[in-house]
Image 1 (cartoon, rainbow, N blue to C red):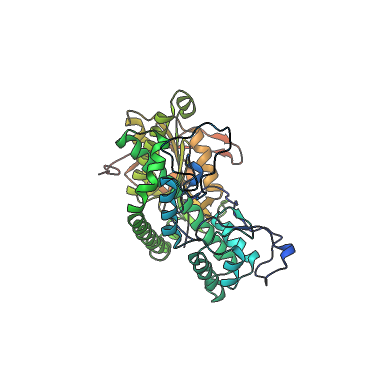
Image 2 (cartoon, rainbow, N blue to C red; image 1 turned 90 degrees about the horizontal axis):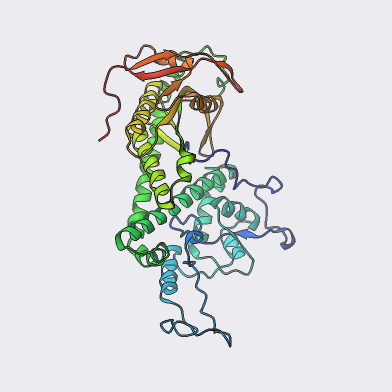
Length: 427
């Protein structure tokens, strides 16, 4: 499964070099603190860090100390759980598959795994540390751990591959859950006219009615995306490799890299100065509008959005023409938008390496350098990309003056403009 859609150089969950691969259970003295908070591979983990009052805490309300100011008369009696915490506890049991009653060593042993090796998978998922005495696990945690272990023991995955795949699941679902919670909170603030903190508490009561639908959509989307990945691998691989030779001599810096892709950047002009003059709500709306517009255009053009970083978006496409169409559509969309500023856009056709969900190589770096050279509202390509597009009537190519670019020496930018045809048509 090829992944081309995450942050650059992400090694946050990498395995410590000093740790052995699969070992028998080590003595207690050499076992470090394990990591796990909720259910392993649980895609509905709540993002408690962003909530005003932790939603998954079940601590009993403390007895007031003598001299404390009188409490809220409407508060629950001492020693009972508040309504919000009761709702959170019930939701936790549903999400985690039952009550937490296992310790980390019990989970690892139940999966037939050393605690040290179990820690690698839990850390790859991005869960926080817990101690030996923390009763924080359910039987579903053990079943999920066993699933990954079985893939390695059956020879379907190496341990390194299993950790990498697990890290992809952890990072993608973590970001997805945060995104979904923020979207739901924002919707409640607008629809119900309540403050942000109130909306976050109410969301705990609303989530049970959404869990099944969100889970169903997650599985559906994953299957569709996996199928799309298979099509890219099996159906269009040969055509893509043939197209990658257009305009190339074979001695380019990216020649050893395996994937041929059109790599593009779009960078909003004056975003920093604009953000300084905006309040939190307006800035959030601008960022969301930018990401939504980029995602729509790139998707319609048959490309893939790799990542967004503030005011910049990185995308790829499988042919030079598809990359050019997306780039022109992005430039036009931001020029015509009544709220967003114009964008500088650049696109380079070449070879890349895909790792950890991100893309690497000279092609990516050159596209970034060209973006900085582009004027607002324009699209630049390099001379090799221009050679691959020169016989396509849909595009007009206008050579620009040579530029000295750090790491590349003298390059020859080419202005890409619309030729014949309608370009991308958005519904």
